[in-house]
Length: 132
Image 1: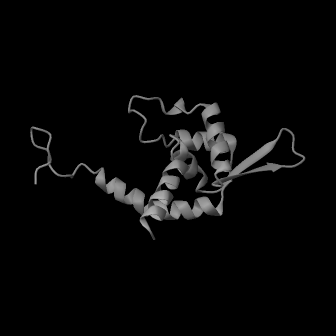
Image 2: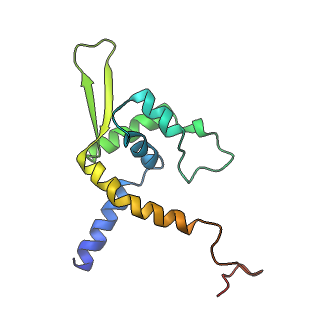
């Protein structure tokens, strides 16, 4: 892999996952197909790391979820299936094979990042610099 291919691919990956709620939505769908309201409930139960501790986890607004699902669908990570002949409309969302392969690749990266966030990191001296 050339440097150009690497950096282009990495940039595309970061753009794919640039939305605040992308991880929570993909995680919600990782267990299988869900209706819109089920995605909302599951995503709200796993707020993104960028949420402040004092934030209300219910701050994922319905319009934000709709935009997130639409964007992930355009990117080919989520498929939307509307059940024909059912009133009111019954729509389910599911991960595509592309998203499933992405989550397989991200699992070790998530474990690595979690390990970095452990409090047992290098001690910090009084100046705020890691001790060696």
